[in-house]
Length: 360
Image (tube, rainbow, N blue to C red; front, side, top):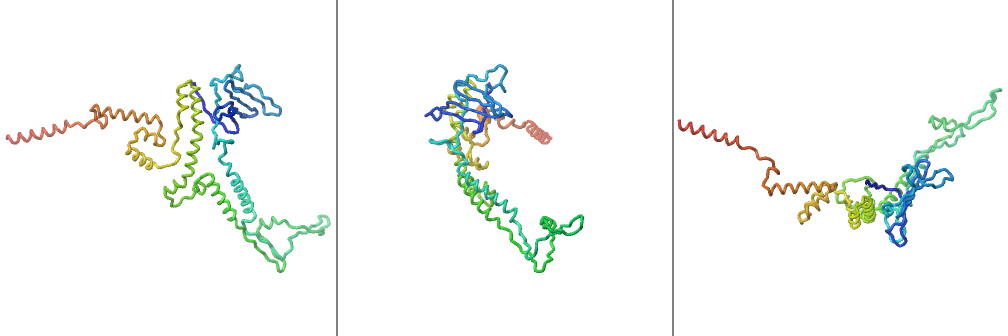
């Protein structure tokens, strides 16, 4: 039987625990929306309840009919006898709910967004020098009566025309043009840069990830700047490991493999090295571990990207090589030895010819 493992967003799923038991799940609820219908599935150790309702106002929850076979009941017994919904808590604590990774930096991020909005507003009106005309009346035009042709008044000319045409006559004596210098927008950028540095410090994000500038930085310096991020990832692996182990245990139970489920319950999750290293660094480390007697299988597991199937294939190749050596069949390792028959015949022919010449 094929078992499918899916991940749901925290806003669409919730798990309830037995009071006083932080790891014993009492129920799990999963909800989602598909076009004009809302769906909900409630998991309990004994039953699986499936409902649906239209999204229009006044829609009532009813047993699900969409997505299930004709005649299949909407509520079915739970074959696992366990809640198949596992929570992956982030930064779980002994008291209180798990805490979001960005909860502490949201105020700083809001400040950065506000300053950026002010910067955009200021750049629209103050980033360029502004000019003003002094000592001159506002440009006007006469209003003429179309029937009599007499001037009946005047109105201000729209300034948009002068702004687009970039042309203006100063006809009044003593008129002049004053200029207001552009605003310095670097003040906004400096405050934003400091706020970004605080965000990087609180989230343990390397500054190079945010600034994006690396000039003449040694590999050791880059590794030192990433030490905080690597430590945070290692800490998250510890929190997520138990939940992922429980997911795999449920998968084994769904497959009907009770013994494998017991083994998984006592096992541990193997994570890839969170710190990035080059191939030469990995090779150097493996050679040094080999020198102190670490078995080859343990070293192979430390190579990034190596799968268990590849390790089994390497073991088989090593066994075949050892068997070839013990059996004396070196050709299986180094290939067939070149045929020396032609060379021997050539040497024998030269000797026979020499003997005949000597007899003559």
